Length: 312
Length: 287
Image 1 (tube, chains in turn cyan, red):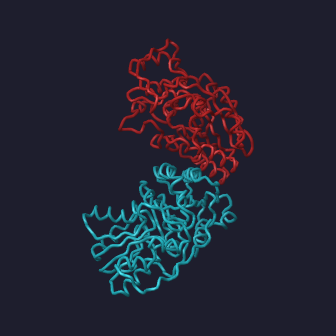
Image 2 (image 1 turned 180 degrees about the horizontal axis):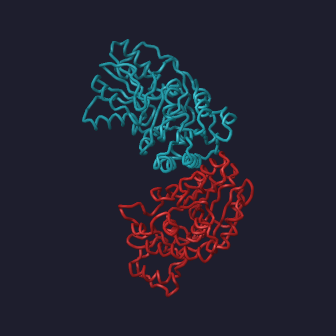
Image 3 (image 1 turned 180 degrees about the vertical axis):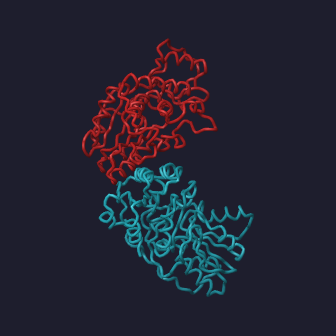
C-alpha cells in the first residue's frame, strides 16, 4: 500500500480529514477528484496553509498538510509553533523530501534541522519512518492522535517488513552486545547493510529503528546502553538537535554515560547530487558506516543504492 | 437570543463604557490604549448588532466568528465582553494579574475569544480556514477578521487575501482598523498603504471604506454583506488612534500607555468632555 492509497482510504472513511497542500501534489495526485472540497491547495503559501489548517481544526477537522520539508518546517515555523503548537491542534504535517531525500536540490531544500526545531515545540510530536512499509504502518496512529504531528515522509521501498507500530515505541530489529545502531528515516536501509557487514566480521550487533523521535522511546535507548559497548547514531540531520542530541538528553536525564559514535551532518549542508552519490559522499553508506565502526577496510560489497523517484 | 441592538444611542452608551474600561486598564502596567480606542466602535457595533454571537451561543457551530488579529487592542474586546455579559465586569480588575488571563493579547481562556493572537498576520489565514469549513458544510455563518493597518506590512496578510480570493470566500470579512499609525509613527511615513482601497480591489476583494466611528456608516457597510457574490469582503474603517481622548488622539507616542492613577481620573473626566488632561507620565513609544 502507498501513502496515497492509505490517505485515500482513511479520508474517504472519515469526514473529519481535510487534505491540504502548498502546491506540492506529488504524493496526492488523485485526491482532488476523490475528495472534492475536502482537498485544499492554497498555492505556494506555507504560512497561509498552516493558519487555514488551524481554522479548519477549530471546526473539528483533521488537516493533513503537505509541503516540502524545508519550507514547511522553516518558512511556516512560527505559524506551526503559534497556531498548531500553542492550542495543540491535530494538524498533521507531511514533510516531503526531508533530509538527504532532497538530493540534488541544493541547500535551500535541505531540511536537516527539522527534527531539532519541530521537537522544540511543546505539544508537537515528531516521526520518521524507515521506508514506505514503515510509513504506512505508522500513519494511521499518527493521524488518529489528537496532537499536532510532523512526519518525515519516506516513500522509499526496501525489502524489510516492519513490525506493527506502537506510538512512542521504537522498533527493535536486533539486539547485540558489541554495538547498537540507532537510526531513523531513509538511512535505516544503510544501517541494515552495516549491521550485516559487522555481523559477518564477527561482532554482535543491535539495530533500532527509532520511528518516533518525540515522544522518544527512552527505554529502548537505555536498554541499548546497558547491553552494548558502543552506541552509534546514524541520521540525515545536523549533529545538533537530532538523534545524537536526543540520546545525550536521555543519558543525562538518567545519569548514564556511554560511548557514542555519531554519524550526522556536523555544521554543514550536504553536497547536492543524486541520492546514491550523496550518501557515499557524506560517508553514510552501510559499508562506510560499518568500516568506520570497525576501524578497517573490508572486502564487502556495498549494495546498489536506488535513486529516488522524481520529486517535484 | 441575538443582541441586535440597532439603536445608536444604546451603541454609543456601550462604547462610552468600553472606553472607560480601557482607560482604567491603562495603568498599573498599562495597555495599548491608543490602538484599543480606535477599534472600540467597530467592535461594539459588530458584537452588539451585526454578529450572531452572544453569551449563550459561544460554542454553537452555527455562530458567527470574530477573530481579532490586531491582538494588542484586546482591551476594547474585554470591555465589550464585559458590557455584553460574556465576562463579569469585576474581572477586568484582574488586568495583568498572575491569577487571571487578562493580559496584553487575546487568549482562549476568555469566553468569546475564538483564537489567541499577538503575532501579526496570523489570524487572516486562521479565519480563512474557518470560512473554508463553513463553505464545505454549506453553512450560513459569517467570519470576521479585524486587522490593524500597520499589520498590513506583514506579507502573510496579502498571501491570505490571494487565497481568500482564490477560494471565493464571500462569507469572510476582513476589517481594517485604519487609524493611520503603526507602533511608532504614521503608516504613510514608514510603509505607505494608500491607496489602500485600490490594493484590495486589485486583489479581487469587494471593498467598502467608511468612518469607523460612525454607527450609521458601520451599519450601512455591513448590512450590504455579502458585498459581492464570490468575493472576499473588505471594510476599511477610517479611525482615529486614541479616539475619545483629545489629549492623546492621533499621536504617534500614545500607542501603549501606562498612566498614573491621577491621570486616569482626569482622562475619565476628559472622556465625558469635562476638560482635557495635562499628561506628565512617561511617553512609551516602543513596546
